[in-house]
Image 1 (tube, one colour):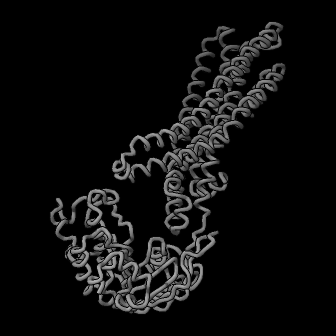
Image 2 (cartoon, rainbow, N blue to C red; image 1 turned 180 degrees about the vertical axis):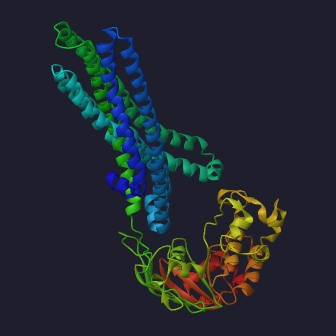
Image 3 (cartoon, rainbow, N blue to C red; image 1 turned 90 degrees about the vertical axis):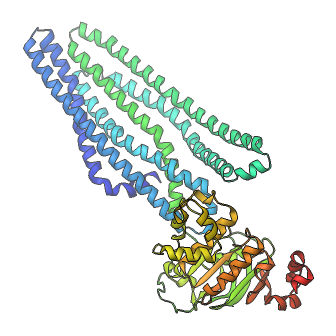
Length: 577
């Protein structure tokens, strides 16, 4: 998964990566050349007292060091560019993929998990890219070249390499193996913390209304403590790495000096060669340490890459048509033919054998008990979810065969949960039509019975709106959402219980103002209140996912017991008549 993700999204940055590889190669060669120059200064300059040789060779060392610094800075610069670009592209890919998901896939992953995958998971893989470019590229070059140069200085001490390098690999490998499952667990527990925090922030009013602050604080503390415990276990394992590396590093240095001193004493080795061999051994071990440090990051990045690819590989249950229809008749007509919808693995269908028509200039109301499938039925029209059986047609064309943009342009949806975006009143209303004039915005606000309170807001149309519209009331949010749909001027209006937060007077005034504006449109209204749908051209009564009655208010009072029960629970006999 990790290799596939890197190969796919690093391909546009091949030039930067090639430059990094070249710079790292030059910088590593320069770093490996320095111990040999140092050995020459000791053997040919200091021991012989040749000051000129010391100065000339020292000057050459300074030049090589400057070259090494330039190459290192350049490598880090191009590594950062490639890594940041990679992160940007992956986040964009996740965002676009999630944008294609139906409600089923979004609920399957969950919003907190999708946020974590887009932010923290991408950041972990991005960090790995930087470290690989700056450290892992250098490590194998330094290791193998260091071994060759160390053997060139003295073959007699080569057995130390056979002891020190495997010892370091085995010690670090044993720690890394134990860290892999902990990294996977950590990402899952970050999801849990995000979910709990998101729920508490979103439901802060409910928490305070029921005085559950202490309970929610305990719930967050439990999730936080669980994440902390996992992070501490990972931290303890990571804390073992540095002492282990330093122990082997220092023990190796002592061994080189101990056994090398005997060889110097017998004349088999020069002091400069011993110094160079020690430097090469340290460079070899440091390269192994860098590789093992990267290996610590690889398991966590691999887990994150797997989670990222789960999103990128997920296929939406709402698939675009192969040969889409891009033109429709001008009239607005909606039809359901034998529609059924069933969630995957569910024993029973949510909707069964739904058939009805809604023509232009008519209002069709859908009413039923909670859980009857009203919102699900409405969601099938704009393809938020797709039918599992039957057909939904717009102007005689199956919505599954329509170009998505063509379908969405004809629909104005006011969802059950009115949501506003951060910005201004005008920017939210123009979400339905970016080219709408201020006059058109005010007209939509007048129809939606929202003009009065918008005029009272500081700035009017430019009044700020907080995220989710939390700085306005629920009824004001609903009216602004209705105005947003009106600005779009669609041919099909879908109102999903969009009048529930309005008082009866505002509800009646809004519906009266809507009639002339929706005269040529097909209007579907999902409602809980009977008063909202009394004057509908046809009322569809849903019960347990099936249609149990179709007709006007007075017809249903005579023919549909379920509708009679709903009416009697809300209205007096005189009001119902």
